[in-house]
Image (cartoon, rainbow, N blue to C red):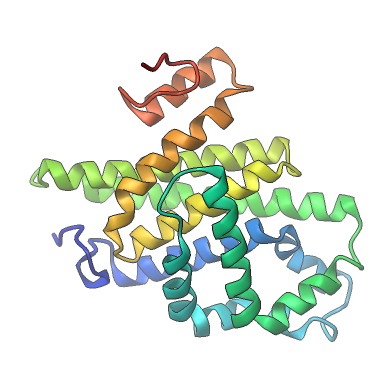
Length: 249
């Protein structure tokens, strides 16, 4: 089995799986940047295919531009885990998509004029459920690799950190189902998706930053959590990683 090492060619997941999950994460990134991306099915439902040609080619365009997009996005990922750094990165990522997918972004601006709020809400909820399913599938793939009894402890910890990041992303999506207009959740979903995307594509220097992201974001989930959910979150961040209910010195 290949090791989880820096460089795409040494990632233990098969190349086709990396490509699939990279595509899925990129779509999640777009949804987090602008919720109207989740409403693409309504373009066909409302017989507006002639008006939104670029938008309907989004998957194809993403495939064409994927390497450039991922490379540029990774360059602007924050080196610190804080809301201020996340907001700056969010702005820079949006600019990248506006430059690389200009026609698509223009059509997204038009799309808001043909959808009502209920249609947007339904499309977001449908897309969130789809993303959660894809992320659960990604976790299964990673945990299957990490179950290798011959894997060194250090490498195992890397996979566990990545799994924790994906698990937290799923929980953020769960919260988004309840509170789909919450801008904080969108920012966290965007940053976590981008961080995981970078690691998936072999940028292992983002693993320590992912750990910091997890510690930064868990308190947001904890604020309205039940005692059972809080216990789950503490398990997620691991022993010694404080949540807002854990005393710190």
